[in-house]
Every structure is written in structure tokens, then in C-alpha cells.
Length: 110
Image 1 (cartoon, helix red, strand yellow):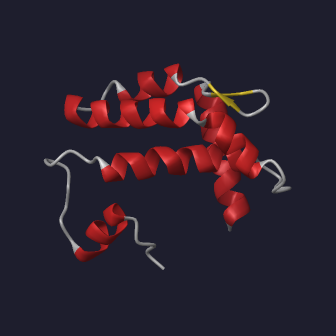
Image 2: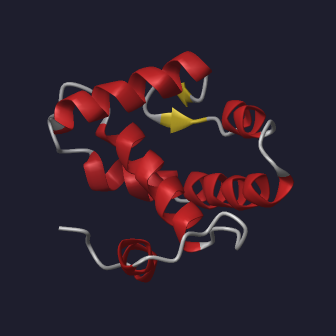
Image 3: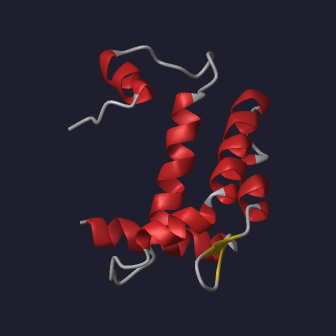
């Protein structure tokens, strides 16, 4: 299952033009994609993308020996963006629930 997720994210990022050779993220296509969203959400996602792009060398190092058929880097980068977006979710989009609050606090959902 994880391989399918990795391949899906790698495919999506590659087709968007965000994933370059050697697992390098170009954030500009991601910024363009999120430009269509409302400003409060866009601001949070752009900051998350920028923060994750700044640590992409660390992410690459963390996944370098995973030996997967698709880019583990792309999936971990995506998870980085999702985690920061969730943590800083705008109030008008936040749904206060037990699960959401646990995820925001960093508690694994399993």
C-alpha cells in the first residue's frame, strides 16, 4: 500500500513540475497550484511548502536507503507540508474534533 502512495505522490509532483531529477523540489509549481485557494489557507500552505523546501536535504538524507520503487522523498515532503498545514490550519477551516485535535497535537492516529 505504501508503495502505491509513494508512486502516486511522485507522479503528481512530477506532472506538476515540482519534482525534479535527484529528488529536488521546485516549490514554484506548488505555489501556482495553491494560488486558487482562499488567502488564509494559501498563506498557511505556502509557508508549509517553503519550510519543507528548506529542509529537503534533510528529507532526502532520511529516505536515501529506503529502497522503494518510487520516490519516498516525494511522499515524505508531501507529509511534511500536510503536517505543517494541519498544525497551522486557519481557524475558519478548522474542525474541532477529538481526532483533529489529536492530529494537530502530534498524536499518531493509529
